[in-house]
Length: 429
Image 1 (spheres, rainbow, N blue to C red):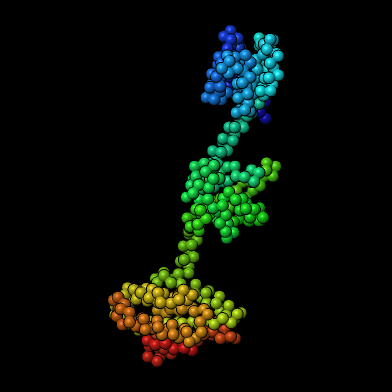
Image 2: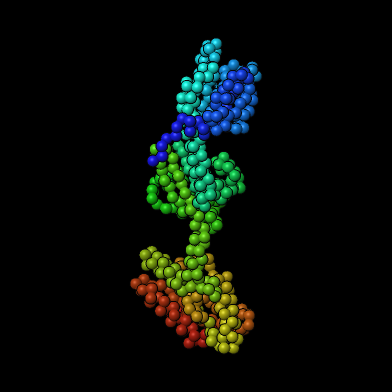
């Protein structure tokens, strides 16, 4: 265990400023104190002393009370204790100055030493205040270290004190488009000033978003930041963790950037649910949508229809024009149908040259009308590299009491009927 530093060791780490206009007194004190301190500074009047203090920020100030009238010792002490209350200020007092000691106390001085300075009496006083000054300097250095570590942290970190944001690390300020915490709190226009959490945009300076975190401790929220309440973009997604420190009346909120993970997740979902050739939903995705709508149909009775269509003689297209031309036909057909169905309909590639349209809230007659229109649009469309492409369409409306599997079998049977009855037509089952 490390031993506590001795008084001499403590003073040896201290920078002391002496403000004294009497040359002989200043010289005597310099001879006494310079060897004991890390750095000894001297000013011959209050104005010079204040200038040196602001430039060098010494650990301790020793000032005479009687100084040139431009700035006397009491006025200097008042200024120093107002702007640097943690810096010890000691008064050098001669016997004839004792009547003004009360004014010095009112100015906030931390102690006094009698002139001429007695080494034996002065060192304990200087040591006591040097120890406090050194402790303060160490705390400031520790705070600077923590601030540095937080600033180089890749996570966005915010702390609050007594319900008000009092710190945001550099990562956070840069991401939100601010240079200072004050700019962030003022909500400078054009920067990211809102947090999207729990389905709503909340101004950062409105700490109701903290209430959400407090109400669900231990839960990890996914949030994003937005500009002036606009919808979030996918380029900033964060996991949020919250920790309270009741003894310090502080809370720390950490935002971990998961944008790359979110973008990768979106890409994986897209690849897992999208047909890579045509860009429409794949069978897995469309099957999920059909199942959801079929459950809704069984529960509420809202009409539901399926339209399946298949490219006529598609093998001949591949054999005659090549598989690349066949792929182009599939892509062009998917785009053509997408442009001619309703926003409420869903198109997916069912397999090979087969496609399926999910039409919720649609009775069979309306589905037949849509299928007939699509059949005509396809037959008239000049497909690049493969003229004369047509499709056979089948339509089936869901019936109460039948399974989804039966519905799918019926629509498939309807396509078979269209093929058997001459192709390039629509049949219902």
